[in-house]
Image (tube, rainbow, N blue to C red; front, side, top):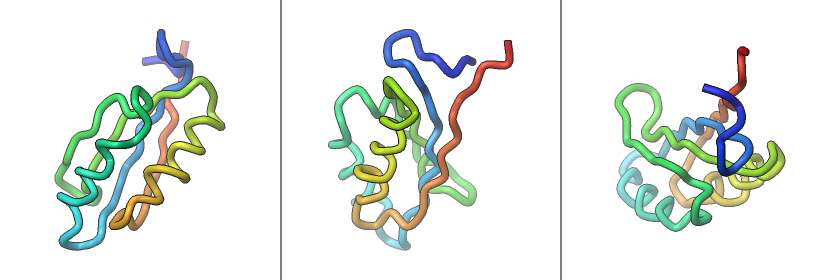
Length: 88
């Protein structure tokens, strides 16, 4: 994997924790996050409730997406962002 997505620039994995009982509502609200910026959203087991793949033209754009849209969703209690990098 590389830090550059062919079409969007940067890619990151966002690990999302939700408040108890809010997982379904959060999933529904995350579906309305910026079109194209949220590439995938998977519900997972373990310490996180969702892992999202997000894409943006710059790291700042990804940061704004995570803080202004994902983190602002009612029921999201914490996010951890892991930026994809190139090891080549």
